[in-house]
Length: 89
Image (cartoon, rainbow, N blue to C red; front, side, top):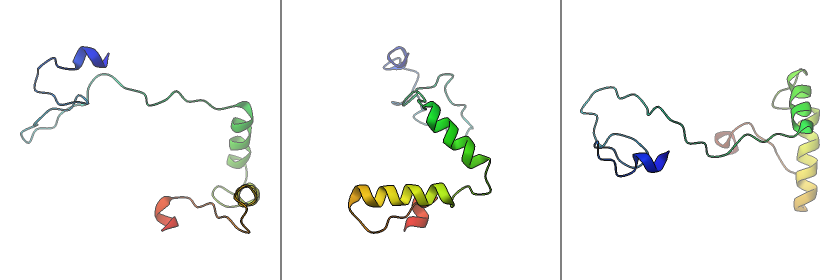
């Protein structure tokens, strides 16, 4: 689908964005380019459901287990799981 739009004129840059909107609101293209298909195992779905059903979302027993597993895998005493990259800074 992308090939049909590439080089088709119409004043669009790569990615389907207009070269200039001249101050107007421009609607996004009518197509999506997926970066990857969602791929979750049954275990991952079960673990997310377990967390969503618990009183803990970003900190709790599963987070502590993940931190311990990451620390062990990396050969470190400690590891921290944080809710965002900004918080990590």
